[in-house]
Image (tube, rainbow, N blue to C red):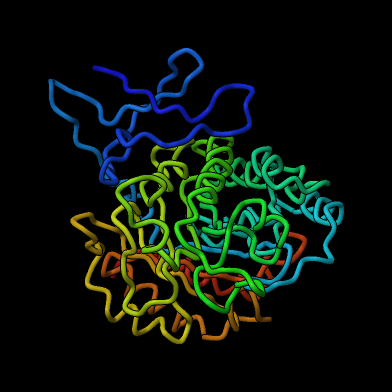
Length: 386
């Protein structure tokens, strides 16, 4: 077998070396990838030859499909989709992350019987809950707004002991409310209004930004390895401007960076709220499926089965919604247990998966009313079929 190297990391260097070879993900192939070291270069080989033929592999999303449902939280430096966080100093953020009760959260999740947690690395404020030397070098903000504690690694280890997998959330763009970081990274919002700064031109191809972001992601992915089972990438709202190209950077190189540390990681790119749920690219493994709670029954009704077709690729059907008043907000769930259970069962029967976002406190714990509802879902979904 000929090994064609894809250089992504050299020991002692903080930056992943890109571009990401087309041999790795030509046409966003989802075939298995073998990882090997050649000297000090990490190499990837697509497929495993058995008897001169490529061995068949199980679907990457089989474990996800079997889970039926899971939990998400937004642990951030400011509320989701807000422009806050400027008042949160690096030291304040570090103290908060250092005090995060990993054991307590994992014990809560174990009680619910959920099989995965989707957890935020960061969002608009520019505060991230894990170190990243590549980000710090490019952005140049000191002291760093990346926490000294690697909360993702700590969570992954603790969750693994309870047979719960960890997926991580990250926006596709720079931290929109951090003007220094977005300028250094070379990022702009893709349409007039929204996160566009006064007098700033709108988006475009943003090649320099994409290369920076892939390198930052690659460092995290290699750091966490198989501890991170998947990625949910938010804000992929301008695909025709940025990603739908044959040459890199594109969806394929983005996906390759996400999977740099774990060839089996499942990936989703979010196009925004869409009902019916759609696949965004053949380079993803499962649908991002962002849906508001009042849209959930209709989104489930329109689900035609486990798979969505996208350019000849099969993408696992998944819905992400919230149980509170909106994302990461509310004192208690909006809907009664019986309604949420029935909807979860309906989607599971069709082969789909649903992820429920719930509030999380600074301590790292989920408020008890949401744990109570999640436990009810877990009990019902674990009961023998009648």
